[in-house]
Length: 408
Image 1 (cartoon, rainbow, N blue to C red):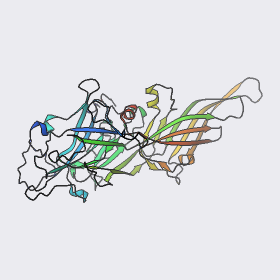
Image 2 (image 1 turned 180 degrees about the horizontal axis):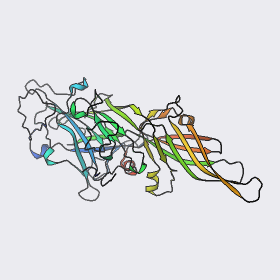
Image 3 (image 1 turned 60 degrees about the vertical axis):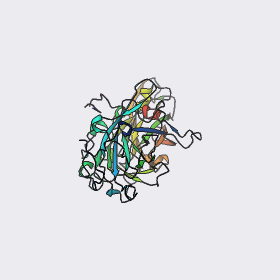
Image 4 (image 1 turned 60 degrees about the horizontal axis):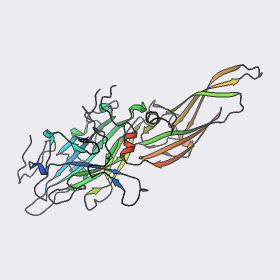
């Protein structure tokens, strides 16, 4: 399938907002709600260089022509008393009443520049007063059919569906309060996996009050929701020179093929309304899961390296079930006949071991795991080096996230 493929005037004394209606504050074009993105780097970045983007000429989190989905919550204040509307600490009292999974697309009008566009029919404007406020958050990549539910719902190839925060049997549109739960299904084909990201919260934004995460625009900071897995080194320890091994294949068995990611706010907003989020994974389904992967060669082409990276659901390894969280190696053995007459015979090697044998208890979100594997004819041993997954656009582009013209 192809991917990525009224206006109500608010009276000043309107006391209630209907949660599912499209609410737009009609203003001049200068007051159009606009968007931008940060590209967050790791803590090891140089001081003063923690973020890139925001200049309209720099790289960003989102590749050209790609889309992210936006949710906006209008909080009515009271201008006569000076009471400012704000995000309620009782999360489900906040209604996604202004933007409900609206797409925003990055465009490149001229080389090296960028803008963020969303359809004119969906334009939203800033309130003229300083007491009405709007809160925003976003996810990537945009899933057009994200309100579908069910184990097999893989919205537009992204694997993302948005569920009701209280009842997994309904889509978020059924009850658009608080944050949706993000149901995510991993594509077993590495070449079609996507870099699933969710932003921090931009709370109580107001252009009139000059309270914005960006300079004139709402600026999202996105975070990777998945774990990046690479097999970077393979050693074969053989008993003698008369043994040769080839046709090596690697599989991860019994790891989650789907899970539910639930966001929540974990920090008070800073001076511009940025509030850090936590992302909790649960509801795993590992039934009959099987993921094939290949050796990650630093000297390989970009396409070869991308095909060797697996984007997997973060979780704790199950050490009690021998069919869960297993790595399997199969290979062909060519061994010289024991008589030494120059003749060879061939058989298939088949070894399995728990992922916990590598010294880890699980895979964490936003981490890269570089596996080194040692294979003998009788056992698999491996070690793992862990590093942060930098949240910059080069990493997003390295992993295939451009789903346009992707056919099933």
